[in-house]
Image (cartoon, rainbow, N blue to C red; front, side):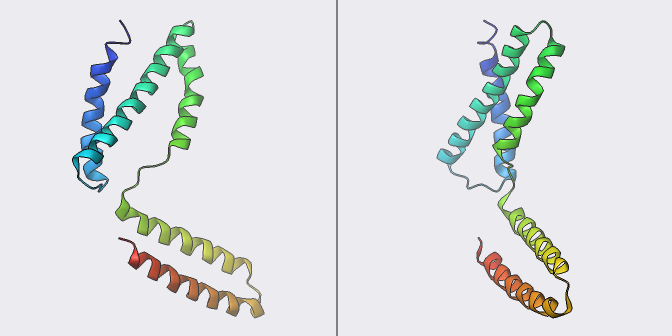
Length: 136
């Protein structure tokens, strides 16, 4: 009985979260894609909820359950990925790649090699700009 009562509450949470994030994430608004997104979010929220209920049931109290469940929640969140809107990817990739290239240029800061590194940096930056402008 305790498990059955969670289904409508988690479904309501999934509808609210999915409708808010689906519009903020700049996803394509078609009914079938939204239903699939809602489906996966609903079952993701269900297994988080049921895991919390299970750890509470098999441990002596809720404090021990929280200590046991925390590492698993951390690992699930770590490997689930991040939901980043498509429009933000350009900025993230540009900042990351330019930072990596700058660090590589500073590591090879010999007088003879520095000019070659700067030439490679400018060519790679140009290639990256072309790639970014072609992403839609």
